[in-house]
Length: 469
Image (cartoon, rainbow, N blue to C red; front, side):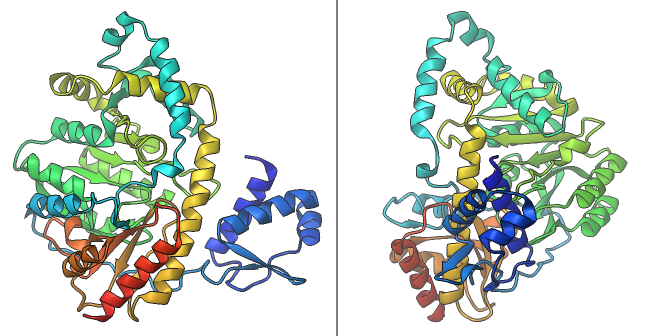
């Protein structure tokens, strides 16, 4: 990053942590320049960037101040302890009915699972695909089908290395998005009827996978800021024959929670003690707001128990469906199972992403994307504070593009979902994130699209509908 970007990130971190409070004046350009040993022009550039991100505002003849909505205006949601007994998963019909109704492009996409295509370098990717295809030999197309495009695998391995993790290239398997990686990994370590520990609330696709594979869910509560409850996980592991777990250690969908490094170490210690394989769904790894990238649980894995699954769908190329798994001791089994099912992701899509990564610019794109998402989060939080009823609780994750909203107990989010759709607004109701269709008074909202007057009107519509309950 450039010096002004580094300085801006330092100020943004102080705002997120509450060290700089809403309405508080931040150091003047002269003070910041002298205190930090940087030029006034660098400070100006940093403050302009923070203004664009919606974190500070300039006042004539007074300086720069932290914006009022750059704080947690509402309390965070409470932890909901779910049933201890393993549960049969039957959510697919509900999920399908919700997802089908979200495909209408005329609705305001608060229920969307993807950020706006406007935030991605689609034209550069198209150029990369043309170059990548010209460089493909007919023999390579066949030879690389199972393992994946060699340049792409090397670029992914390089990013692991830059993150402080030496990953053997043979451990990497390229897949059709992260979902295929997670599907294959789970199939390699379970049989129908087995118990799998999952989060509560959980990403609805994980519930559909369990349902399809006839697996039973053991729901582990998630704290909206700290992540899975490790005390309850330890208790469940001691009393139930759990065969695998599927967790998001960072920017969990739908709540946005992230495990601290200390909690990741404790989680991995539990895995080792019970010889338990873990699917680490890290699809949002690149969407952190701070200046320091998080390290996955995989970083601690010295016994090959963690299958670390990633994807370019949420950060670069949503329609290309290119993901991967660092499969640990299960890499060979995953590769064989892939050969028996889909054989290979799209070779042209892999070639396009490989060319894009080789030419540089990915990290610059990611910084722009993160800044846009942070500004959009601030706008949605401020709008929720203006329009949602008293007693509403809401998360403020340090990355990603989802907010988890806990409405007052009398709100039925499925009914709200149907009412909102009639008004041209989508949302993701809480029950689709639960094996037992809990979280009835909760919903997930996406701030993944640029904030406009239409977005503000949609939040006002939701507030009006909520007031009618």
